[in-house]
Length: 171
Image 1 (tube, rainbow, N blue to C red):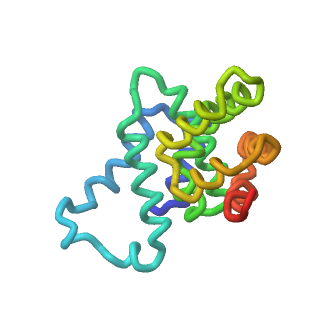
Image 2 (image 1 turned 60 degrees about the vertical axis):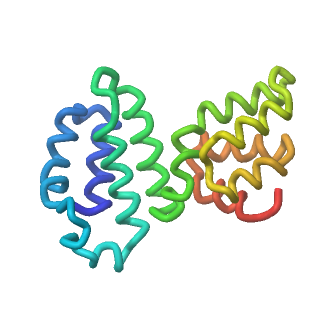
């Protein structure tokens, strides 16, 4: 199975065509084919497209560790991640994975910060503890309210390539 095939399955899951159990069953051949001993693994996919390979396995892990009792959060996350892969590609999606999975909470925290409910110090504390990549944390720490609002607008709109580009230059 390729990243494109996995994305198709995640899209079908996000749209409600597949249950979590069915999605997990479609992943079994990939899991069974992957040797536990890394020295026996096929290095070619990792050499040809390392970002695709890393994202592929991160997405499989996300599905495998999801709460089977409540599929809704995973459906939402799957929709966001598939949208990101379509918009920005695998490298950017992998880079922003934590931001994408956290975008609703992050934007709500930002809204509360802008409204004065959460202090700037509180916001910076959230950023510090977020698990976001270092360059994203640095950008968020220096961005003003307008830049942060634009970032949230782009995330909510699914404009992940534009959001990533924003965070690659000074706010």
